[in-house]
Length: 273
Image (cartoon, rainbow, N blue to C red; front, side, top):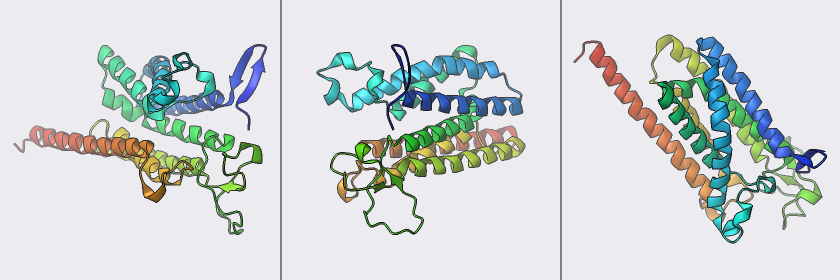
């Protein structure tokens, strides 16, 4: 599929931009439902979106540029050329989280609480984004044999003109974006279930649902990294896998630390100390 979705005179609408907007709208709808169920103020979500989205987009672009600096060191004018594509999910996540932290600090709100509220929305947005990437064939998995048996294996057919250079003889590739979207939707369902359970029994420290969800996403991206077309031979880890594994481990460690501190406070308040 082409990169341009539509054009109005000199204005051009890119397909991936439409995918991102669909992901944002889906996440916004999920956030509205979560806020209504928790009887919170939805204006906080709108403020976080209005501030966090542009910061996240620029951070995602700069994250990509830093990861591919050899391509931009001699062409600095291309750094802000969003039309050529190239963004980093990790850079965007860091930009959004920093914006949310500053906003919550400024308004005296609990960052961890609001991250828990927004966790399902973030997960849905990620899943919609991956589905869009799958349908537009923007991320290609490893090639599958040309004589693939008709055993209902999930595959992604790539039209000849869009096949990666050097893989023109292959028709079918692993649908890695579809794999990730499916697993992210499973994490979404678990996060919703965990939110319902925790609302009743309050077993998790604030931020626990968000941290567990992001740890799961990190491990998913790490595992799927072995099936990318760009995966290194002999099972070596590439940069994206290292970032995903590091982020997942940090989220899990932070979750355990917060759980321990929360339990200690509960014991103290309960008169056990």
